[in-house]
Structures are given as C-alpha cells and as structure tokens.
Image 1 (tube, rainbow, N blue to C red):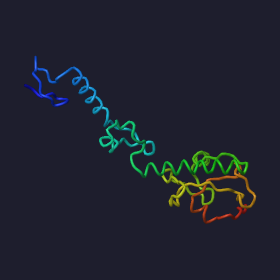
Image 2 (image 1 turned 90 degrees about the horizontal axis):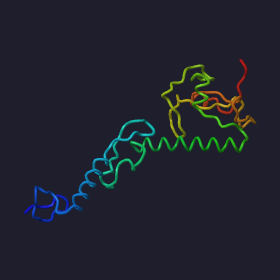
Image 3 (image 1 turned 90 degrees about the vertical axis):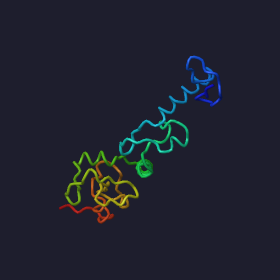
Image 4 (image 1 turned 180 degrees about the horizontal axis):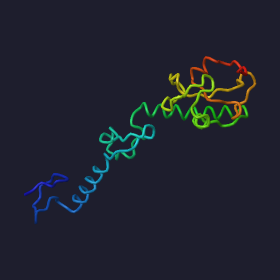
Length: 174
C-alpha cells in the first residue's frame, strides 16, 4: 500500500506508480508547472530593476499577473509623472498652446538652465509634488499670467529653484 502524492489516498501500487489514478497524475503535473512559472522575475516599468512579486504565493497565481512596479514608491512616482503630463496636455489644449515635453525641451537645450547658465544633472528628474529643487522645469519667457502662450518659442529650461525664484517676472534683455 502506498499513498498518492497528489491527493494522499492509499492505493495498491503497481510498477512503482506514485499516483492513484491518471487524473491525479495529470493534476499534479499541472500544479508543479504552475508553481515553476509563479515566481519568475519581472522588470519594473519605472526603475527597470528585476523583481519577483512578493504576493504571488499568497494569491496563488503566477507573478506575471501581479503589478508592474517593484515598490509602491516606483508606482506612485510613475503615476504622478503620468498625471502631471496629462494635466499639462489638458491645460495647453485649453489655452491653445503646444504639447511640450519637459525632457524633449531639456534635450534641445542640452540640459543647461537658461536663467543661471549652469548644467542640470540628468539624474535630478522633477515630477509634480517632488521637492528636487535642482531638477529641470519648464520656464515661460513671457509668463502665462502676463499673456504669454504655452508654445515652443515661449519656453526654456530652468532649474526648479531658479524658475520659482523668478516667479512671474518678465525677463529683461541683457
């Protein structure tokens, strides 16, 4: 008498069988293969770090179906960046301006601040609600509050702190 490896029932084993029926053998095979697939690593959409979902074993489903981010910080910062981009696009449509991407502007101006003429570090990314004062930001040459438009010829790249200190003052030609 032997116990079935899948269901645990006792049965008479013939020729070193490990399962009481073909059905138990097939179910055990499926269960083993699912367990192998469950914990393979994924790449975080934000920081590109490899991770394995820590709740895959609790949910009982493969980790490929659980989340796209390695941590809540990556998820929240990615969502903030997406919301910020959507807000800028919506506001520019309302005011009749262009859709301006911060990092496209930064690449065009070679990551140099137009206000202090200092280089902006590419790793200092700025997202809405972020306190990185040395990060890049979009500065309007003629402020929107003074009738300026959100167009490519009216924007320049600036450190967030430089842009904040300038406020809505118009630039004076030097």
